[in-house]
Length: 627
Image (cartoon, rainbow, N blue to C red; front, side, top):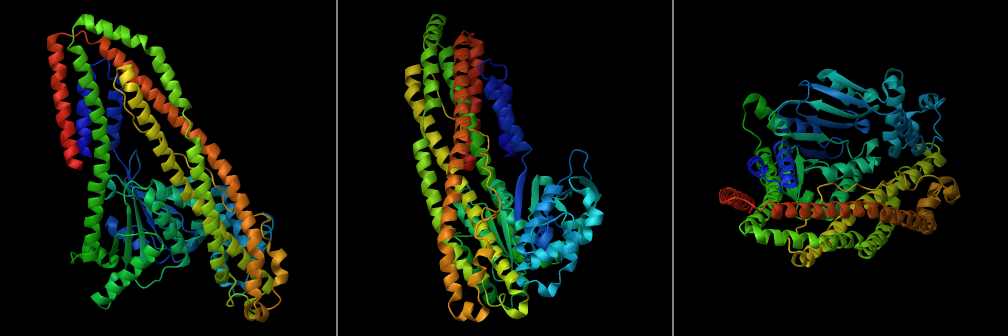
């Protein structure tokens, strides 16, 4: 990538004196800067106690990330090299806004069946809670509320602020739950060989934290990261939270240009034998394939041994060494090749345009005047052709894709809801000795609806990726067809370049099934007593009673999202059509300048032909590299 950046910069400097390549020179310079100063984001995912922090510390070479004994409030931590006056081993702590903390508190109140959250009385309500009255399904919410109440006096005034702190205080904000529950995200500035390469390591909240309901944040890190590392622990089975994340990765995998996912089984040193380790790794592979991730890259590592090797000059963990080798190859070769291929395509376009110019410049002056007059005579036809492209309608095909994808979303979520029902309405929760039955019924109902709501949001978010790819394919098809159709009639070189701007993800609200949907109060009468419910068929009857209104609600939500998606992507597609139209107009202007500037001396023509040869060599070398 650095070598490609050097070639792009050299080409830009050579072309800069030419009046017809202003736009091209700016594009080459911009792309070279991106390649030189590229930042690669590596996102870590996994549930609590999977060993994410120890794995990250082994990657960084020092135990810099704290391990929290209470995972439910963990915030996003980004580890990056210090820049712009930032100091090594310090952190910028961004606290939640007052609105965000209120939403988190209200959500936990609702999940525990405590009624509406009130700013005036919530602290007293939390103090009255007794751990023995909290069902297992509500423990994370109970832990969060207790932490928030304990830290409110100290942290409430910090809401909405950003504080720069030393490493010791950073670890306190990351690991001490009474502080961590008020933190939205932390940027930790740490200089080491990994971060100095431009890598930003993102430690995401555990899949089982209270932040897991913010599916949009998780989705954006999955979508935008250059690499994803999912960490699981050697002797832990995949939890429900793990499976949610893995299913989302499975939904998204086919939409990425590269397979950027790595799966790590941590604490491989616990294996009693190679055979046992092989069996565990194969079990993980099976779980990944079940989640829709075919041919996963799985590595069994010992972060503890890797850290010891760094501290004590002991033998490195072979699994971690293999991971480092493959991961480095991915960053340097796969991501590097992708960057170089894009740069080579840009250089190739410059080469073709310069070739056309030298061809025109080699003709006599009289012919150049005729060509210029003829070109200007086609200006109206060109503008009409560009307007025709802007009006091109890909809406029907795109909307068909939208409708089909969302139809299947409803069906999949309905089936998932029915499968999850028994997991939430479980005998271990709904028994007399576990506390008030009505409240526990409410907790079960809310937990089930929250789970379905999260699955629906994840399905909708994954659908946006497929819709983006569909729109990109349709736009490319139309733009390339336009170029082929008009290149001959306009007698000028035309080419399509994909827009560099990222697609904006449409807003998908959290808690789609909140607010008046399938209220627990409505269905509480179906629960007569635990014996009738679990042994007399009451649970199956309740599930059957819930299925029809749930399906109706899912259809209603998805119909609304179908319209939202259509409006959102109509705007996004229109923006890209206009960007492409502007590119076509730029090509026209530069081609007109090319012909106008073709009145050149033999010496000047020889100079530009030598530059043409040099750029041609650069293109060949870059293509050979990534081929």
